[in-house]
Amino acid sequence: MLLAGGLLAGLAVAVAGIPREHAPLPAIARYAMTIALPQWNLTEPVNEIVYGTRGFDTFGETFLLLAAVISVIVLTRPREPRRGYFGEEAAGQRERATADPGGGRPEEEEQALSAERREQGDEPAGPGTRRPATPDRTPLGVHAPETADAMTVVVRTAIRVALPILAVAGLYTAAYGFAPGAGFPAGAVILGVVLLAYAGFGRRRISRVVRPALVEVLELSGAGAIILIELLGLLLKGSFTANWLPLAGPETILSGGVAQAFSAGELLEVGTGLIIVVFAVLGMSHDWTPDEPEEDSKEHERNKQR
Image (cartoon, rainbow, N blue to C red):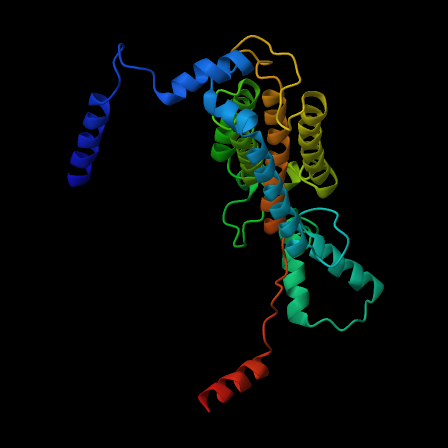
């Protein structure tokens, strides 16, 4: 009751403080009338600030994100060549077993690797068995771990409905720039679309798209496009963030000139960068700090007690 009363009081104060029709324009509205609309044909002044007046700050933030993505790639990189974000370590183990069949791998390690291969669909769950495509096709009464790639029909149906709506909303935000930041939140929305597809339908359905050979090239392409857009402003107009493209009418897909192109580059760079980070961490199968052997840990405890 106290929280509800506090919220109601706050809303009442906010509504009472709303400017009336004869009130002077706030600072952000004056900025829109004097800068955003006349110079950029943008009705969203915050978007103009992000990609226009303060575009150099956004440029720096973009490449901070790129540096973070590179750091995650380095930390999650397995020992064998990178072919995908999933199953790289298991692929290396299989290659080692093929090259050295008598390597003497412990039975526990072999069982763990076999379970991982079954989970990833690289070997059947047992003699004469096949991995079910969805939980709906799993026979009733089977006493075994769930190994289906996809979720249930209820979850898959809900995701099929939500995915196109989410994708269109993200692309609309980037294309028309009515939301502050435009390309940044739209890139996060694209990550949400990919994660929904992964959670609902399994990694096999996205494996052709979410792979280093494609996603990392797209991210670098977005970063390169942003650099080119800003450098052309410096060469053609004498300012790193100057507009050098023709302006279309306000509230159209081509309004904003360079600001709109910058936003499109952000959509590509941010969306793919977040996808790289998330799926690189999901596919990580080793720790940079190995566990101490049991005997060493016991000796360490005895030394501490002394």
